[in-house]
Image (cartoon, rainbow, N blue to C red):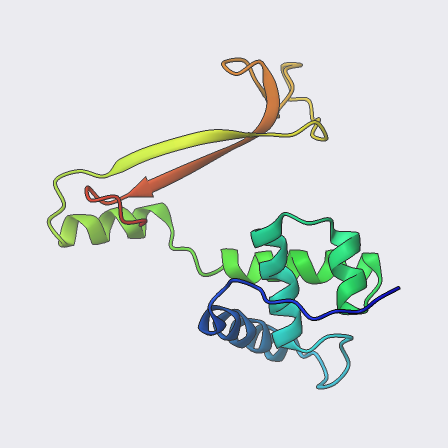
Amino acid sequence: MVTYAATLDIPRHVVEYLSRLLAAHRRRIGTPRGSRALGPFRQAVLVLRWFRERGCVHCLARDAGVSQATGYRYLHEGIDVLADQVQDLHQVLDRCRREGMTHVILDGTLIESDSLARVRDNGNDLWFSQAHKAFGGNVQFLSAPDGTPL
């Protein structure tokens, strides 16, 4: 094996922001200092690499020097920490009203996947889109009239 250095095309302040969120989360849940395989900064790099490169978690974990299971735990923890920053839909719409926006734009797409399956009470698959004739998750996006994400 050959080791090499690489550059991640994400601004450093973004990595530092996620790192601070992860450090605060660790303090909140009472994680003893130094008890994790990766510090908050390296965990943030792992999470942001996954978002940026859509790489396999096994490869990201290997590059970070952790097991695949730990890589998955760190990835999901990072995603959860980021998701906790999102405002509730009602809060966003109230802010739009206060700022005098005449309308907002709602758009979405189906992110196809072949590894989702769950049946509803009526027998229909929860992750199947009849409109797209495909399995996947529906991701929706709300923006201001000028396209700025809300």
